[in-house]
Image (tube, rainbow, N blue to C red; front, side, top):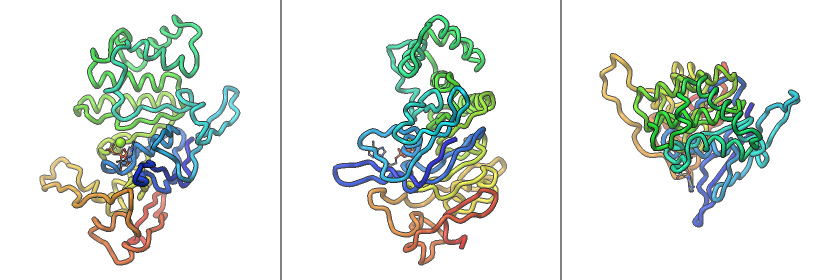
Length: 319
Ligand SMILES: Nc1ncnc2c1ncn2[C@@H]1O[C@H](COP(=O)(O)OP(=O)(O)OP(=O)(O)O)[C@@H](O)[C@H]1O
Ligand SMILES: [Mg+2]
């Protein structure tokens, strides 16, 4: 559905480039929830912008390509490449940005946010009919129709996030990108949002990409996932395998940091900080924090190794 071919993206700053996404290569398949994990600043949101082709200064694509594979009304396959993906926004691919629930237009009722968005991209011929369809869709998603009359501040954070997910999925896009959809919500509300996302995915049988720094979120709802470190995707595979047999020391540390019922051991963070993306080090970017670091790690960049069953990791320990 969505294919990234060795994509690199950077922020063009006055004093140099911030290389936020480095040669990322993977695909999102039909009918799956794909997760992207990694600590703050590793390039998750930038990668999602690249996938949605939301490229505004200072962000630029340095190399590689993105492809959205979809079909037209007659079922004929269509491929949109970066530079033209905007033609398929909302209809084929939609995006819920990080923190979107905090930046909904405060002086516009929810109903008009739906109208504005849909009319901007696809025109609205019959407002009454559209309102009827929106109400019916909200009902399907178990949202009260009264939210349409509300202003964003009158809704709870969780409800605003649900409304945004409803808006993003209203036109039944085949790909939905959601950036940190549960961050800043309490755990009970989080669970509700995750349930909603997975129900919508099952209903539409489409593909979803969920970005979250919370490994628990990935464990709960993703089918496959990628782990990012310092702009690179260092491990990718079926979520179950990532959790049961993580291969990269960084992934192991992320999983080890998760609390488990019955385990009272002290959880420690990962020592050290990620390298600068302005001037990333040679070799493996995790070398400075890795407990297994070898001489080669500081010099030679590890290649992606196939460890079976669609599971790949980039680490010298695997060779
Ligand atoms: N508009 C911008 N201009 C310049 N640099 C940016 C911009 N947005 C992000 N960056 C830099 O790009 C890198 C990747 O940022 P990004 O927001 O993609 O990370 P993230 O993984 O989504 O982090 P978080 O978990 O905090 O949301 C960081 O070094 C960040 O400082
Ligand atoms: Mg982010």
